[in-house]
Image (cartoon, rainbow over all chains, first blue to last red):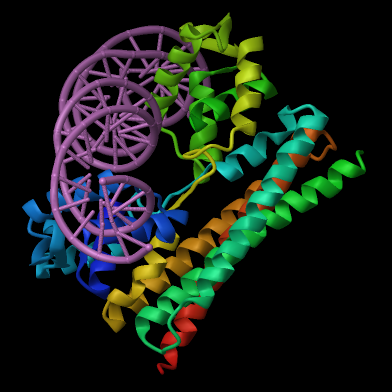
Amino acid sequence: MSIRGAILGLLTERPMTGYEIAKRFDHALGRVWPARPNQVYTEINRMEEKGLVEVVEIGARNARRYAATEAGLEALTSWLLDRSPPEQQLRFDGLLKANFAFALPTDQRRMFLEAERRFWIDQVSWIESQMKHLPDDDTETTKARRLAAEAGRDLYRVMLAWSERYLAEADRPA
Amino acid sequence: MSIRGAILGLLTERPMTGYEIAKRFDHALGRVWPARPNQVYTEINRMEEKGLVEVVEIGARNARRYAATEAGLEALTSWLLDRSPPEQQLRFDGLLKANFAFALPTDQRRMFLEAERRFWIDQVSWIESQMKHLPDDDTETTKARRLAAEAGRDLYRVMLAWSERYLAEADRPA
DNA sequence: ACAGGCATGTAAGTCGTTACATGATTAG
DNA sequence: CTAATCATGTAACGACTTACATGCCTGT
């Protein structure tokens, strides 16, 4: 239930509408855990039924703004501390494909690796631009986000380095 | 359809039974793309219907040993080159949780980060032990697997560094 | 007035997990 | 002979994607 945890985590910052939460996934969180708007809406409704969130304001266009309840905060804590599979599992098809790149003929492997390289360059520069927009304060929230962003950037750099090393090895075959 | 690609990739090494494929996920591939035996079996059956794999041998206990067909190899290539979402997306709840660690009270955050640290140490040492068992040859297969393993190890090291930096920051609060 | 963004949903289908179930063979 | 491993499934459910649908409000 990672999406549930993520929604609750976002709501600890401030109350939000489903639309705003969906935007956060779209613009930022989606790079580590994608979620589409409709999934956000259906999940929030289920969470409201279970008493994890509650409507704290109804604005223009009948926009419902949610906040986490006490039960919601407990659910957030237990999600963070939950180490049972399939929580705490990487699902990373980039590394999976990396294992099987040998199966491509040489020219297509080059194309594949160059596309990978461009992709990871994009990811690195995207996250670096995101880091500039982090608030310039010393709160726990900002600290956690800054450290997470740095880890994300470094993960992308590892994949970038992988693609470049592979390309270099492809240049001088055994 | 990452599982389909992974199965086809494994079958390029040599023909295998569903059981053997499931073991590979369990022992190695599952660290980047988990799959349970039943999912492997159902997927292989669907792939056989579609002509992507074929039975090349029936052994003891009626074990069916599969190989990739021509169509299967094409499917593998197009999976590797496919860059459309939700392919090519990270789904990494570790980084997601990293963003929300601030929501835990200080003592629980320590516990959380120390558990993270132990977890990533385990991952690093697991993959390092795996790397020792890679065949000592110079084939493309081995090269791809070695580079992928190194990337995996470095990814785990990034997360390990993240947990340690966070723990260090927690020691000297702002 | 109309385009663009705000705001929310439903329905169908696929992918993945959990739980349950069965039987054959081999090693000790 | 009995435990472990080999070998394969089915059923139910939950998570996620894709496609479709609706209407409100604000700025130009």
